[in-house]
Image (tube, rainbow, N blue to C red):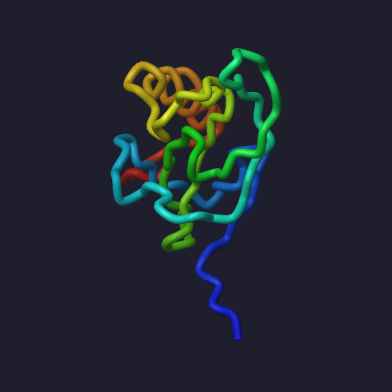
Amino acid sequence: MYDIDSLCIFPTSLAVAKQGLYWQPIPHLVMNIATNVYFTLLVDCYNNKGELGRVEKPLQKMPYCCLGEFGGFKGLNLFAFFPKLALHPNWTTTFLIDKQQSVWVDGVFLLAFYAKLKGEDGLL
């Protein structure tokens, strides 16, 4: 018997949210990935000697933000990961700083969504 309580997909388009996305504009601690999800990404990273190499990094140790919950799929959240922000070996947080969050939300995320969708009642 198996207990499957997670689903992990790696979409290449925001079209995965065609039924809507209940957007979380402010990061909440409850939306953090607190346990090992057993997925890694091969990312560029500087080692302690300052040399650039590639390492496997667990998703929960990479900078990310929860964008929100999929419309029509209660409890299924959409996350954006930022592997290039973890280039430095001393990077210790998974949070985006305010400036990074602003650039991501205002300069990328909202522009992409509003280019195709119109929202009402918090549903984009």
